[in-house]
Image (cartoon, rainbow over all chains, first blue to last red; front, side, top):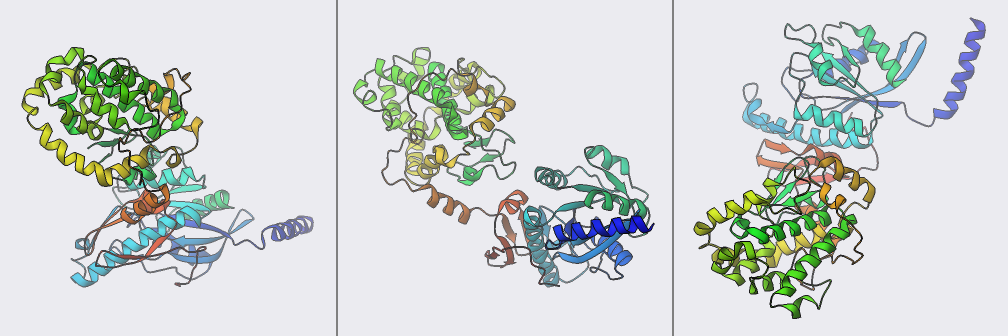
Length: 212
Length: 306
């Protein structure tokens, strides 16, 4: 064990020297609105740092500015990966305040809509330059084959970013992980319920493996 | 829908500059023209020639690798015209106004043997002044989307269509051409001159070649013999020999000004072009309800909000 620890420390020093001036890998949590991205980000952040990332809501576009949780150390099988989690606004091609008017008055709905639109613009911009890997979160109770999903996955692939697809909300009756696996067979799909904390072990194993 | 992306079939209105930076939807850089009003002119060898012209335009739009095709089409056109009554116009230039060719073309019915009735019937000058704007009949395009040898083959369906519809449409060309001619003098000329300029195109000949063979619709230029070394004339498609053609930089600037990555339908209602948002250097930090938005070009990602 002593030898192993020494070896590990030695390797750590080397890697520290190599990467110390670089920030930890930024893993963008992307996906359509209401897929559970913030719930997942909060789950990960709480599990490993004790803090939450942002507020969750059943109303779409609760996250309208990307939020980052830095230096989240995830340890798996003796391997530790340090990542920055970037929780991004849900990406969509249309934002309409009328979606929110049941929940709030019109002015607030319009503001929410506007901010959500700005958030999508930012999220798309960061996808271009500022993330090193992507966790693509999908609501497994919804049809995964949409223009937004196809386009974003395509962009991610074109950038050769490592990507994990998270089939979230497996606690729902309508959930179908297979539908997502079939839609994007070229990528690893991990089923989970971020809300209920189901299958988080596999989630962290895959994060460590893909982004470590 | 005079412009259509050959990849995703998205169409653009005439005079649109959106495609100057590639198709906003799919990023494709190959477009074809399909003017609705060209039907009445599409007949017999005219249709064939327009097909050739369109093909060469496509070739030049998509890439300048297909110079042979372009040149060949040019020569073909020139030959036809030369056989008619406009030799003086055609043998003077290689890089000049196709307008001359187009306009002079109908002066002689010689080349238009198979549709002489229609050609003779139509008002030649107006028809062909209109031509630059409507150079590519839609029927030709629609019938040849998947037909690799369409360049050699006059699109028969379109010909018959045109013949069938010719009688009813013949009355309108003069009016229409006047309007289009006006348009051609302004934004359209700019747009098209930019579209065809090789400077505006991706320099990757090989890549485009690959795409062409995959895409099917673009395969014709690749299969054309490209032994003709006559340099293509860049402005030929536009047929507006204006000396004040704006520079590409200006055009692109204007394009970027005009193109909206976020369309404000109404306050609180937005349509987003994700690909455009992704492609843009700058990003929007504040949307204004008056239709404006504030953009920023960050050096790098900043987490200043938390």
